[in-house]
Length: 347
Image (cartoon, rainbow, N blue to C red; front, side):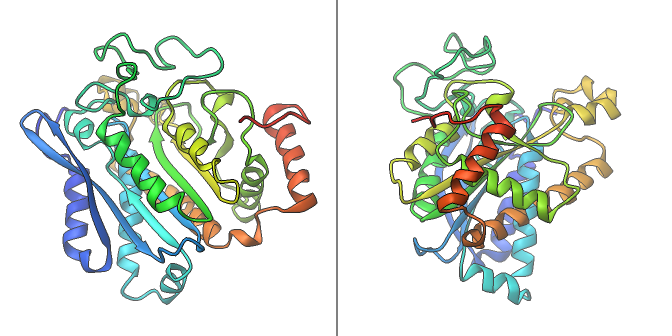
């Protein structure tokens, strides 16, 4: 479906939630973006303890306008959190020790137009001022030829797009300002398996916080024995220029005392197409479950993952490795994901 200049349903739902329960939330409009004759806000919602010493967790969706299920998953989790605020004492206790950040609709113009890119034709996940160290796939890895071609990065030397800047501003202000933080960005469209990707997308070298990533994967395996996720570096699949999470992770590494773990939930939409080949008749069908019961199943499935991430952030002192344990996790991670040992981390 092409929404033209109509307000996308995901933005309508977000505004309804904010209107009904705004007294429980902190709401900011990070920027306004134009799509045709309409202008749409990019919202950031926060709740919980803002103190830098407590951990923070961020949930992001709708970076690509055709991947509507990413926004839907984040909105479903946000609704779950909001509805529990009136009665869930355990949640209130958690929020005393945790900062929560939500940006469910990062690219409202793309959602309104039914396009992967924003209204300027820029793919936000190729828009950061960062070039890959290793060769990338042609076009898919990001290109500067034309906004009429997919995966357009924007013009060389120009500022990042307003939506990209808004996401970076929220991450820097609400996550990187804390001693420990995790971000989850919800996408769809690759493969038949649900994947959890971590940086880098721009190089095959491991990140500095590889031990922490391995420890996080380990507690996921231990606490959710039958989870469906393939936990891996994005570089194990393909490389790109301009990845926003690579860019933000490198900024986070400027402060060695802080730990920031950016994750991408990449929902395997090819499975939905395999089960319902008629979805190939629609562009949205390549990226979203179009049958109602499958859509509901996806939301139920991933809410548990987002809840787990919040709990993992809140209790990070119980699993983040230190001393000899950190070295052990690094060696295990190199064997698990890179088939090597003793390799230097990327800068």
